[in-house]
Length: 356
Ligand SMILES: [Zn+2]
Ligand SMILES: [Zn+2]
Image (cartoon, rainbow, N blue to C red; front, side):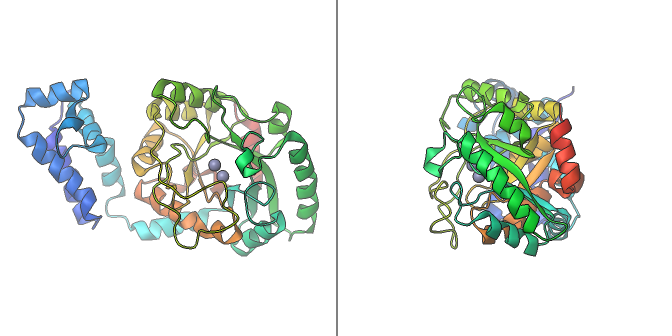
């Protein structure tokens, strides 16, 4: 394919961001990258894109370097394509519409693991929010710091959920589930028989987050290919801020406040596998996670993935955090029909049980 002009693409992105009244620092990233490239010959730009040294230039970061590489490969940069796709749309209205389309939440915790409230309290809050279902996804055994459930405790929880469901209002139900640890070898930290029995399985990496790239990629690919895994949770493991105001105290023991870099893995390979195996990519709404970052949401969308916009709530009030995930999804142009929790409970469970 014929190479595009990377500087023109960077300037176009900056222009569209400015017109959309986006944060100045975002605009500046593209303007300063365009300026840095303008001082080089076309050959040097191409060489640096080829050997991955664009980011050594002052003013060029990972995101802008990727745009340049895509331009030089003759593709319209994904970042630009998504901006054009969402241009002129009222993102606030779209985020609101997306939130209104959500019928449940697929990632929540109770005091059976590291949540702060009983299952009943979480369910009642979900009813009040207008949800039709809540998937209860307490942690798996190896996550001992979060009081992960052994197989025996999970079986007891399933019996308990059946009792709670019987007492809840018509038209609402708790779906059974787990946030299962993706172990170092990519296997899942719970018995297959139990995983098969649960309505929804969210799988997340919680340990060895600094595994080197090829190892982490292999680990995630193995998990995504596991037919029990329905949703890949907080994909990069990053923590972008310390605990925000109002997110304090018990009920959040498993998610301590600190910043943490993203895990390093081949996101395109992982998202391609998610699309192939029809595993949904979670958009985690927690303010301190905001995971995946928007550039990766855009790439997952390009790859054809489905999404689940989840709160990862550890307390009833946090069930209302879906709005944050919807805002980020809208910014990336994620349509409602790609989001599995816009479905009814029946459709969701059909999907999880019939996936290849
Ligand atoms: Zn988690
Ligand atoms: Zn969680």
